[in-house]
Image 1 (cartoon, rainbow, N blue to C red):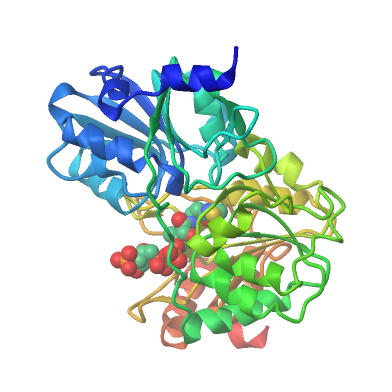
Image 2: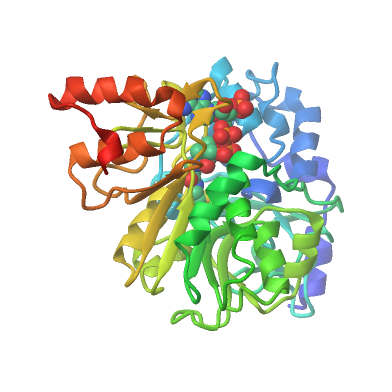
Length: 435
Ligand code: COA
């Protein structure tokens, strides 16, 4: 059948499409900044039609259903929390589900049936294929496995290459609504982030393949890589900082031994400049997260350097990244996927970089992790920890050596306190300056 005919037949108003969502349904959402904002805002407007609809996903987007006062209608079931979903969980209007990012598609396929998938799509191409654009990750999986698929066709969604497409005939209801995609503003890079970025960049060699987490530190690190040559990208996500180095000819992917000359990612978060840059750009290949983040896939890149951040590190090198004590802050995301992938990569390195303090008030390097926190990267997986005071390589060190190395990169105001904790724990004088 002619796809244009199918398109016309399935084109409906938001209200009609949303009438197929029933109370108690599990609705899985397109990921991150590719959430179908218009459909969600319409659902909130029609809230009285719904009781206990469960929304799942990893949602740092607007998540209008997670606003206060909607708990009776909508419940957040998220595998990564952003500002609005975090508040919903804290109010008791939602739950957090721990899952490695690369396992999320499998979770949807095997354990967690989806009643309705709601996704944002690019306009169809001449063959009737729409692109998932800036979020392929598990967005493709939910669209391929849900009982009902509702697509918001948005001309602002770029057409990205790779395994990023779905045919019109696989969508049940299409709603046309153009709205600019949510943008992630460029982060503020202060003195502390700059210093950390400089240390991180010092561990990166020409020709390395990079994964970068979210936030100011990865962007700060990129600013110190302007003189490097032929860097490559195999990353869960990228933001505008990576685009700038591509345009400058620093990131060429020419030395990648896997997906040579291509940037491989599973989702993107940035400004409109980035979304315009990836549109129909074959330099980028986007694949589902169970491919991009699978540590076995990551490790096929030689010289893989992973750069991520965290909330807290204890003196043995246990890394907490998703929680602040018992308060769930974000999630594991792809941190461990890449930490393991880098460990298995020939010449690979994994780096956790963070400011030494929380706004100067408390140390992020602590004797023991705060009660109630969950460990993200274990003492067995950790390698480099970086703060604005230097680099601690923990990999092959004993617990005593690790603790001294970490005290050396802690904020000076907290070193004596940490040294005291060291002496209580290891029953020896802590001469951390000797290393
Ligand atoms: N104790 C108490 N609060 C702390 C803290 C600590 N040890 N460390 C950080 N915080 C607070 C900050 O003050 C800040 O609070 P605010 O929101 O009120 O300002 C908040 O936690 C976030 O800290 P910040 O340093 O601004 O975070 P970030 O934006 O640099 O992100 C992580 C850091 C760890 C939260 C983030 O990288 C993450 O979620 N990581 C896990 C997933 C991951 O690594 N994915 C990798 C692939 S993308």
